[in-house]
Amino acid sequence: MSTSDTTTPRHTTPTVAWASPELADIDHADEIGVSTRRADGTLRTPRIVWVVRHEESFYVRSVNGPDAAWYRGVQSRHAGVVTVGRLGRDVTFAEVGEHVGDDTELDDTLDEAYRAKYGRWPGPVKSITAQPARETTLRIVPA
Image (cartoon, rainbow, N blue to C red; front, side, top):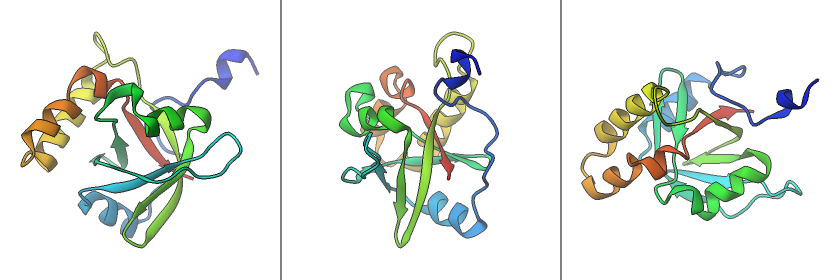
């Protein structure tokens, strides 16, 4: 395996699917808890984030951009747990692209999903659809 094969996961079709009840629970939740794993495998304190669905996948962004503690925490292992109500699921976090130039179709689609789902909060929606937040877009993949 070459070194290029060990890079951070990119936007691809998930290999593990969400169960129908999980899809419904996460899709209807305004907020989810995200606990990222430290390098030693222990979980960090959960952070509340907004989540949107596109097709059969869920996506999150850091409203505070790449400097947010939870987003920096993702970078150590790209693994963690998402919680919605009583549902807790081990997941991985996949990077989804360059977020600039011609590679913005997914970002544009997700911006619209954020506006549709969270439009009642225009200030935060403006932040989560701005470039710094777009650069932190992660696909949540069930583990």
